[in-house]
Length: 264
Image (cartoon, rainbow, N blue to C red; front, side, top):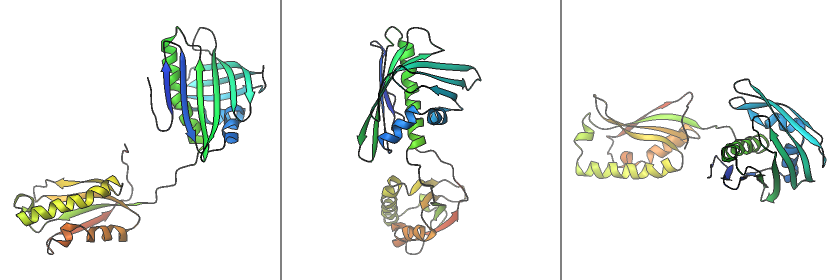
């Protein structure tokens, strides 16, 4: 089964006991290799307080060398993972064993393959050795989605801050019962109004848009994201409701100090 989360993906063959996971990171193979092999790097990005944290990573980074990660779950319970390096080919490949304290059974084998892509690196993880342990295989598959997501977030390019301005825009009609007493001409105008704003919704300029059934009179409302108030006013001037409304339709705008909304 696959579990897409952002750019990180994983699929688990719980019968055969193998996990494949991948993520594309906009950083060089050398940068990604360092993040996967240097103790100070790994202990910084591997984990999140809501799940677990990695408090210490000890490594003897050579073929035959040992490594150990010590951490603590969100519940405060300590854990550790140990292993041995089997292959090292900078900056392309690392193979190591994996033995967590919370799971019994033999050690599994973890392989990182780093391949250059346009502008960055494709990280492929292969985790073998879970045959006969389907629950552990599925759990580790979900875990690799989180881990690769943390890695990409830590060393990949940081998102630019949102400098957009947000406004609540009210579209008011010429009379309180406008929505219930539309003429054919006004109905055509409002259909054109909706058709005008729909592409702007899809482009992300509009967070929400629709009519409000206020007892004092129905009006339209929109939460609009723009670069400036001038852009908002320009968009509204081109609205068919304004152009065809013969002066009877008008907007009232109010800026928002801050906004929290869910993205899909």
